[in-house]
Length: 229
Length: 84
Image 1 (cartoon, rainbow over the protein chains, first blue to last red):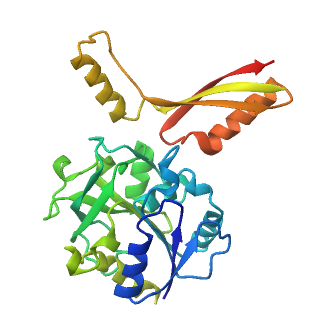
Image 2 (cartoon, rainbow over the protein chains, first blue to last red):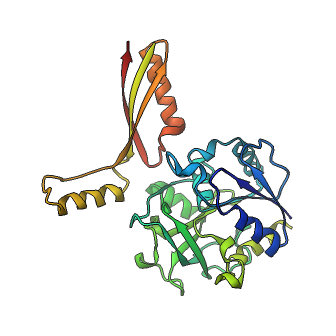
Image 3 (cartoon, one colour):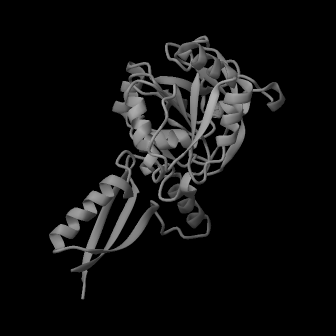
């Protein structure tokens, strides 16, 4: 399976994603610099976390216009897989590949900790090997992860089974105290209508080895490899 | 012709503004009971060249729609002034 990790100025989880994909999951991986217009033919594009362009203007707003993004949009349009993690999710929102937008965390704090997320859908290439209702322990690290969309969009997200992960307790209970950032309807990750583009705030690449405190992120990588290989 | 535009973007009224709320709370705890509501936005001071005012305004609308504001959560307004 071939994977590309996109690197923007200010990306800082690109090496972690590369390591998880190559060393842990044994995928064939290459870095793609944001100025490259040509994206090689790959099965999966990973847009990593970080602070692309210093989060200037709005998170992801400038990265969205990087030359490589035209190819990423084309890649997604052809039905091939894209996963945007943290800042990658923010870039996908700004690019219009996913609906909604990000606001500052409700507490205004930058939050870096392990959280529990519940799997809401498993008819996607990203969650096919995970049971519905299964909770995963995956870290978040963001200041702007407060997902927002209007009522109509939220209804459509649920209607089309696009809400993939929600913040919950360890045993899958939904509640404000389990929602770290104030996101709408406790949303942690969504897919597009075609279900080939996933955006999520938690970092599965930082939870791919026991040494790091959790290897639940591997369930997502395993699902992707199972679906695409 | 050269114009100067002051562009303002802010969160839509329907979107919660945690920064604005926290700042309002800080003002009221400092004793400014006069403060009743507060929204935080961004201001852009832009100089641009255009054939006339109408063309300048069309161009600013395009800039706002494409980059300067995110229509999902923000709204914008601007004032244009001709520079001599």
